[in-house]
Amino acid sequence: MMLNYNHFSFCFLLCYYYSNKYINANFLAGHFEVIAIPALLITLTTIIKNKPFYMTLIPFSLSLGVRQDVGFFLFFQLLSLLFVPKYIFALSKKTKINIFIYMGLCLIYVYLSLKYFLPYMGASQDLKATQFWSQWGNSWGDIAMNAFKHPLLVMHTILSVGFTNFNEAFFYLGIFNPFQWFFVQAPAVLFYLASTMDKNYLFWYNSAFLLPGVYISTYVGFFIAAKFLLKYKNKYCFSALIIVLLTIISIVLIKSHRAVGTDDYRPKKDNKIDYFNQILSSEINRCDKKPDSFSTDISNYVFLNNQEDKYLVDHYYKSQIVIFSKLNRGDFQSNEDFNKYNKIINLVITNDKNYMLLHKDKVFSIYVEKSAINCGINKGVVD
Image (cartoon, rainbow, N blue to C red):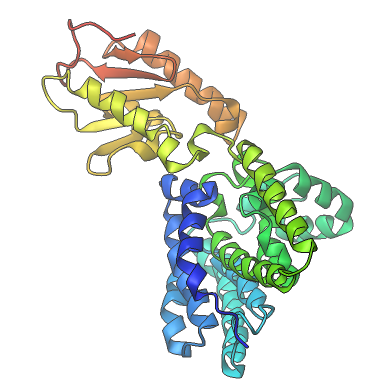
């Protein structure tokens, strides 16, 4: 008998989306990877609904086209669907065959991308390997071999970075269906073993390709847990299970800051984008002419309006408004990037006479190009 989960679906998915900091972070990241989330979800959804092959082919193809490694993540997510209980999603025999076909296409796509497409466009086959995983080897083969040779070190590394934070954000619900949960989590190991914090903690867009599979895994785990609880609804242990469940959720919520990493990982309503827009609007209103070009740091770049010209601070000289915020080493991939950012700040503040201070507080410093627009000149600077 099929579990009637449709009555819970809307509320569960709505709360699930708006409460999850990783989903929110992807939509604030300003990167193209976010495009893959709906495409991958549609791909997986049409499969679990036993839709014809051709209906899945379009979102499947669009998913692969987002980036060269999408097939790697999608391969494991497709495999995980084979372990969903029948009373939740009953896959037909034809659908299971389609899953294996799509898995094969994923492998072919990844192979062709790494072997031919990327080198043809000028990229080295092992470029990313040496850039982010050099501590494990000098090529993809070396990295894989060393990881298999040192399983305890791999496990320790995984538990030391973003693994627990990521799964806490999904209340570990996927673990109620362990095989599915294992396969959707497997591709994340590549990120956990990386050398930079943005990757091994899944900051910003680095969780994008994982989210659709984890999303469905959590959804399935939720109903498996619900069925288990309903089975014991007339017994004393039901109360104990409810207490345990509420305790776990409370711990996750209390410790949720561990998954934050930066201020921008807070829920949407608490995000500093509101303060950013408030300050920027206030200062622009003091200008004789509305600015049409802006530059800022990597953290706040996503807050700028896409209808105007915007740049990272490396190219601040192209903009009329330059915005700095107080950033830490953890906001950058390397010491070199962090030092470069501070160097640019010093350049604008001390050496570039074309810019003057417009606003400064504990969070933001805003500079304006003098010759472009009369913006705050002789009108006082807000401290």
